[in-house]
Length: 138
Image 1 (cartoon, rainbow, N blue to C red):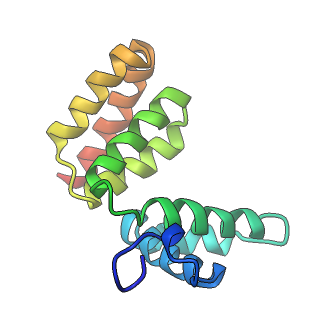
Image 2 (cartoon, rainbow, N blue to C red):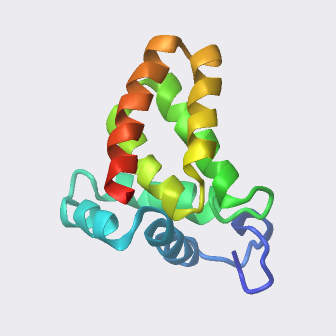
Image 3 (tube, one colour):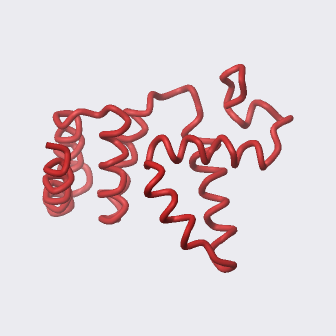
């Protein structure tokens, strides 16, 4: 967002570097600096453009939009990870959801909802991963 709180796409004066910089701030807030530092340490010539794209589009454009609170964005992301079977990403985004302020009860509700709309086997895996992540916070 710019200093008026408007999303990137409504401010054409923002450069790609501005969007990247804002995206990196949000990425660190949501995923934690430790995770982002590890991801950045692995960047090479082959992955550099991909990492830049993720930071600009996911974090600098979508996660900065004012239309949804971060807890709702996290709930949507958890559901998408369950639906796609992206288990490592689910674990990472569970940490992010807790960092964003989602409660254990809200996470459980997302998993229960996902059991109906994604599949019971997928929700079963999500609950196992969730139990592990939540244990780290207790």
